[in-house]
Amino acid sequence: MTRCLDCGSERTADQCSACGLTSAAAEVMFRRRFLKRTIFFLAGSLAFPYVSQIYAPLDLDLMLVFFGVIFFIALAIAVLLDRWARNRQDLEVLKRIYAGFIPLPWILAATLFLNGKLDSPKKLTYHATTVVGRYNMPGVVRGTRRVFVRSWREGQKYERLAVDADDYDRFQSGDSVVVGVAPGALGIPWYYGVYRR
Ligand SMILES: [Zn+2]
Image (cartoon, rainbow, N blue to C red; front, side):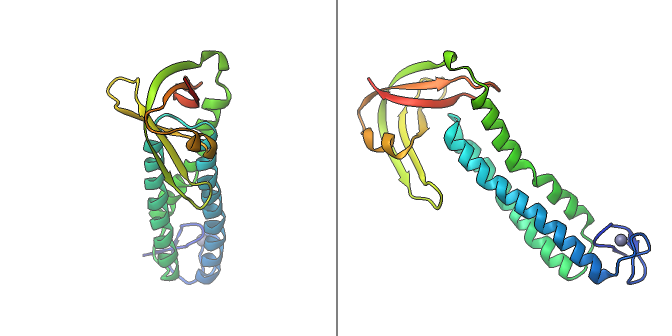
């Protein structure tokens, strides 16, 4: 059994009896929507790392791993969809799974944005700690810079602070610092700043 690539109805002839498109026309329609969805997904995939640098959660690296998994699964589904559409295979289930992935980067970005934006600056807490290391990976957009400090959270050995280039250059291993942390309007604590003690 084959299904129309555009509307998903069962198709017995080359022309779909539900939407009237031929299989070639249905593929064109499918690809147009597929491209729009993919662009929307990719835009969100740029927005999320961007927002995550402005309101960086303390557990940013964990979130980035989660986001990376989402990104590569969606990419793999996109490649499959492209191949299956070319072979005019039944796409209905895969199309729906893909549609579920499309808003995820935007949801993550919006969560971090609201978490930071709606937070009250009065609720900042300051933690005295020590720098134990640094990490710098040049990246395509802005790169990844981390300053590692001893953690004040229970069950956590280090905090990997997502710092900007200035803060990265300012601190060395052994420096005594104070880390400002905001609680987050949605309960996700985020890194506000690091200061010399
Ligand atoms: Zn159709």
